[in-house]
Amino acid sequence: MLLTTIAGSLPKPPWLAAPETLWAPWRLPREQLAEGQRDAVLVALKDQERAGIDIVTDGEQSRQHFVHGFLAGLEGIDFGRRVTIGIRADRYRAEVPTVTGPLCRRAPVHLGEVRWARAHTARKLKFTLPGPRTLGDTLADEYYRDRVGLAMEFARLLNEEARDLVAAGLDVLQLDEPAFNVYMDDVKTWGIDALHRAVDGLGCRTAVHICYGYGIKANIDWKRTLGAEWRQYEETFPLLAQSRIDQISLECANSRVPLSLLGLLAGKDVLVGVIDVATQAIETPEEVAATIRRATAYVRPERLYPCTNCGMVPLPRAVARGKLQALGGGARLVRRELGVA
Ligand code: ZN
Image 1 (cartoon, helix red, strand yellow):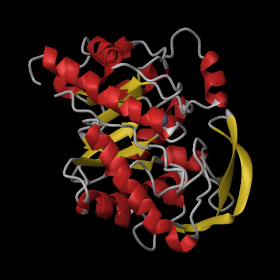
Image 2 (cartoon, rainbow, N blue to C red):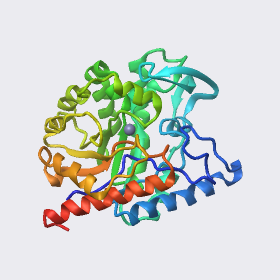
Image 3 (cartoon, rainbow, N blue to C red):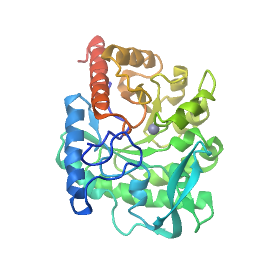
Image 4 (cartoon, helix red, strand yellow):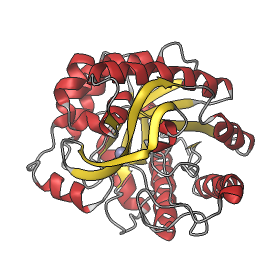
């Protein structure tokens, strides 16, 4: 119990991509890139194993950004036609590609990455894909011109992809939906349906990660506007509790999310964020343990998975490594108290 995992991403080595940067450009020439990415995955796996993380990821070492990795493998999206738009309800501006034709997945996008990671760790393996709502929010669409239709099309393609990845030995398939904390009405009317379509028939555990974003300035400024208590989850958790998704990931470290909202997720595994990714201060294992203990008031330890608040890709590597150690160490402390060490 209290099995640890991470939201998904880890910093890339400086020889692979510019450090501490979102959408960081690759630093290797095209002919060396795939090999460099594979090497970086080995380091990411090793760092997690050393820290005692139970359910590991590939650290998202092979994608430039958590959304654009999957998009880059699809037909119908023109990365040559990048435009700068406001995303997440105009919270910040990002340069995004454009949908210019029917979406099509000619071949698996991430299968090689999952096979490589699966072959190099004996731990349980999780892989992350962007969720349909967030995908639709992180591009320009000049073809479908129908937000729901586009998301459902993405959900269909995600399901095709996920089936291939699960067949390669995945234990957990996670969909990242930070947009679920922004477009609350969409979550209610069709967001959960889109998730269901994406995970339909998968033979593994399924997770959805919802968060308040990386620790970039635009997000920190946004959080200041959310008041003393962040209650976005209060609207979505009852819907997710009724859904067919197995695990829900949320942020609890240094966030203003009332922990009582965890009580809305009865019957689900809860990935409780106990590591703040918006600060370079490294938590102590005792601090992590304290957050876990507080969460056990609402989630049984068998259902509680200590996790990071969000991806750690923008952090310095040494900081991320320290936070991984704190995550593993904090969970060990609480397990020991519960007599299951
Ligand atoms: Zn996140």
